[in-house]
Amino acid sequence: MTGDPALPGELREEIVSSFERRLRALGSPILDNLDARTQMLDQARSILDEVLDSDHEAAGQVNLDAISLSVEIGTSRAIEGVHPTESLRAAAVLFETAFPFVLRAFSATGRSDAASNATLVLHRVIMSRIVVSAVSYVGSCSRRSTTPIAPSGRGYPETCTTVLPTPWAWPSRTLSCMRCTPGTM
Image (cartoon, rainbow, N blue to C red; front, side, top):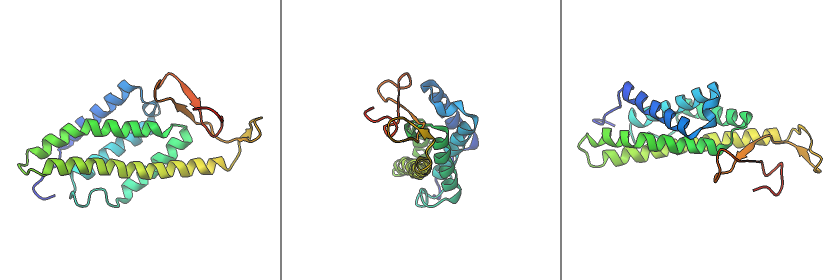
């Protein structure tokens, strides 16, 4: 993106720090696990790098490092029993946190389309990472579901240990996975 600014490292880190503070205020369980926290912050940095340091036409296209990290995140969240809504919540918080910084940085170029293009790319890059992570998450859950853990006494094997937060009472109330506890939700 010739002539467009790239955020300096310290501004990128300011966005990442603000993102982490906002998630901490929301009580995100992703921050409870050091590996999950590191993955999430690495993903945020990678997203910002792709949006702010690359050609906007190429942003959101195949980036093997980003795909690898997203696959790792989806698999890890499934293994850790972190429900995908937490990753979606984190993605929304990242967008809301980065948006004003990106808007300001690209508005300063004097090009009328630079700021709107950069914010659209931010959205596209975040969503492309979410899609890859979601596919990995579902794949990991599917593999787990084919290996029963123990009989449940309900006529089918107990296969899922995921606890789902209820969106209207998060994080105080939880329900078991619909698959393991029919009739919930």
